[in-house]
Image 1 (cartoon, helix red, strand yellow):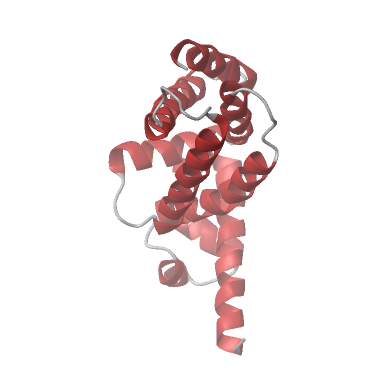
Image 2: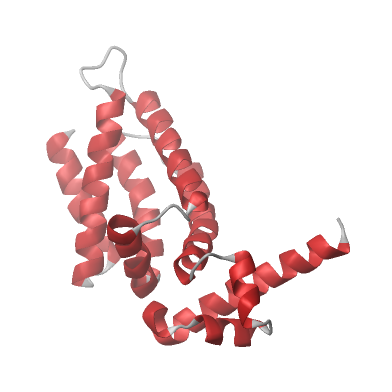
Length: 189
């Protein structure tokens, strides 16, 4: 790898680490680009070489961390009924979001209500999550089944996100989110 590329990667990682540190200390809204660049030891303008906005930094930060959690969640799916398999995946993700409540709220509010086209990393992560869910559902349904796999994935997604948003809003522990999702999936599946 070239020296220039090595420097770019080091700077990018320094900005991600600094952003995570600043946001952990003062929250997403409280963290400024000036604080992030100062902490990373780079010029203010350098931030915008790497990220279009503070939201883009948050998106990449979450996407990289959530990718690890998602991969592990699918590797750890237990054998058993479809509902328990889906709940297992959701529980891993809920624990991640609950451990990062304030940043999760900032990320989701931006994505749901203010999103622009600057988040390709999380779009790729979401597409991979859907593909993994589809495989999990197809592998768990009896053949032939009265359930359409795509509809099951959509139903899970709707219940998962409704429960996630309610959980982040309420401040309840992630175990309560998981129990609520399990109850809803049991009714519908």
